[in-house]
Length: 417
Image (cartoon, rainbow, N blue to C red):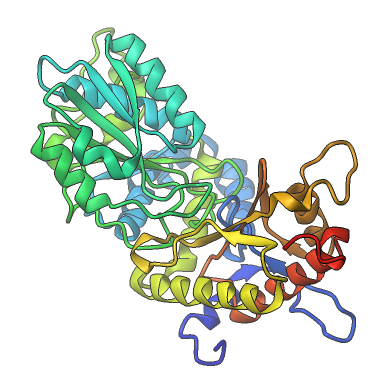
């Protein structure tokens, strides 16, 4: 499978552990790219040059001579094809939370009069809910949590917008972006999407599906580095109506006029706020070079093949009834991760400090070189980044998981089933 993989050579663009060595039992399997992507090889040299030459020698001249000032839009245009957006619709900067706040408040300000509520994905990453509730308090609206699959039935003429995750961070379920967006528009509401767990893993199609606003981080499948800046997408036809709740000097029509009156810039730059984080921005720009010559459709094809294969290996190597997949089997409902829930019958097998058994299982996997992550109370998450994850990685991870689970007293004694 690896020999036939058209993306196999892309793995060399990343800094990864050595391949598993059967003789030593060592493993270098990184399946946590849905939390933090691996380091692209282009980044260290680029950042060394930025520090030594652009900052160290050119100093203030680099805002113009090295293109620092235009980096948020330039890098946004590099991300745009990966999320199905045209040029001039994505700006990079700030954190996901800050961009969520801009998108939700800006969306409410564009909504029709008489709107009284914001719908929020009931399964959302907690921060999205925090931000939506804060935005609602500021704008005088109420927040109503709704399961993503029920939004089409729950949206009304009183709904200003819905904030929805494209992929559920806990289960890996892919929500219906085209269908939900259409249902919201049919009721006169706006669609705001959180792409943190989908951008760089599967086609999104923001322009094609007429999404109004979207945000996402860049440190997961886009491999931009820890805390790398997030991005904001604003549909082209809405940009002149978008009124940011954070009108910083960087989004002013004439930033250096130092005018006490705020006039927003034209187009996507009005999504900016303050001075860009140049070191992180340029690290992200170098990281995006790993995508040269890669289509998001090829990434999606490999993602589905990897997760299919991993689930097949789990079924073959893991004792029955010890874990169950929370991730949908249907391709149209699956992101690029597999989430496995541990059986409650496992109890506290490793039993130290009251740590849930699933957390202890993940600790042991990591000790053996298979890196995923744990979400309380019982979920093991494995993220598959097609640019650098191999089919051998998937098989190795399932094999080691089986070894760890078979070593649990409840499993070895036959009690778990």
